[in-house]
Image 1 (tube, helix red, strand yellow):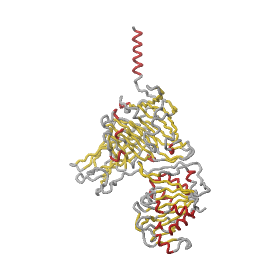
Image 2 (cartoon, helix red, strand yellow):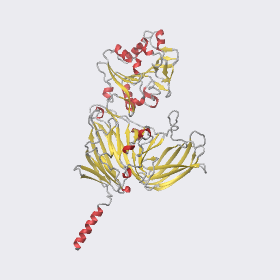
Image 3 (cartoon, one colour):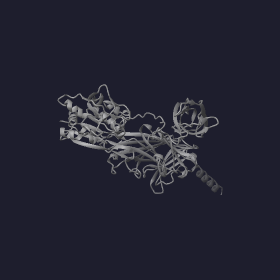
Image 4 (cartoon, one colour):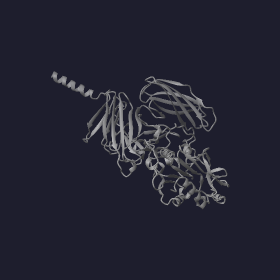
Length: 638
């Protein structure tokens, strides 16, 4: 009996010990009920179960402070770290794809597993041949899941695609009461899982920072996602499906090259809302007007995001908008030993509670991390006052735009970029709204009947203006003798295409830019690298104006007789300014009408007159003669 008692005691010890947290991080490969293997990654705070047979998505997620709560209740329809390309319709090819996996590190200080899958042509060739590698890392005693995503082009041609990361879960273990927080230029956008029709359909199309968060208002448990702001395009929540997701800007990847981004997921508890987030600091802010004192009380709740902080100092300032009081600021306040229990501080700022004007609240943070490193951060928040939203009812614009950090991007390029000249002239014509009215194609065909013209068209999709074709393969782009932009916006082209056009012109390519309501000022050229590439500078967003009466030309008289020049007067032209090194071949009352210059080894020509109004100068024979002169200079008459 004594032996049996000892065995029962030993069995009980083993049973209890098996439920104690494992302080050393570890990876296990274990079969599930369906007979297929799962990858279990855990440390003392987190336990993730990843299914490599169904998109390498996290199908179970546990966080020690949440207790027994499981946020993924339906493994078939939910999961974290779900991969997509946004060019594909949801759910896309990775949703059910089988991933290979490799354990890179197995504790005790760090565990890391790389999951990989090669994309196929499922009707969208542009996304085929991309090796997607997703590496998930946990460190001992860490509360944050680190994820590295790498896309490598294993095909023989350049690709242009956008990565999309999706998380589908029920915080607190059920669907009700999940609230979503996203930083946008108009302030913190908030939606709820109980809202079937959220504002802006759940999108924040101008993110102000690289984070997004969700909090369950019942259990005060939540999840914060961090991503690289430089590549971020949209933040999004599908409230009816309880998703936390974001899309990245499309990226051009040459053959053999890779694009990589870093992502983090931070589970939190005891926080009611998220007004600011970084991988150091989580902040929830609420406001209350004190009419008796004539002030605005700003209550701030702070948590450490990943590791405890030795100290944080905070200053809150207020600037009232639509009125003229002096900005006000509260004294600096100090929080010592900030960890994972919320600490709350208050600031009181003078505020006219009668007028209740909107205001911007600025928070400045400086502190000392656990390792002794100093840091400083800042945030801007919108306070609506008597307004319902940060939207001017007259034109829909924001009363105030939160300042966004400047993005830094580097185009991925092949090791060698060279021009390719083919036997027959090659032209790429990217067509927007007014491009047919310029009658460029007839001039091209007359000058060079053997020319080959490849066309791309603007269309308006779910993600705004886009081109249905652009040669993101450098060899393909470098084979064109001329690229024509026909009334296109910079947004439609995108950063990658604009950078590639700069490389193209530097190496001897020729560019013809036509005007219209979506070009130059309204096309937002001045805010992009187009401003460097073109021989003119846009002067403002609304730059189409009635043209003057006197047209002058700098062509040889054999090309253009004086009487013919008068027929080239447009009714409207873009108000631009020619750069010092540019040559204005045509002007209208001294305003640039046709401007050229050399960019590297190539030529760039800008047409700022537009075929708008009752009279279209592009219908005339003199305009065909102008085009012939320019196109010959581009070498199309070979």
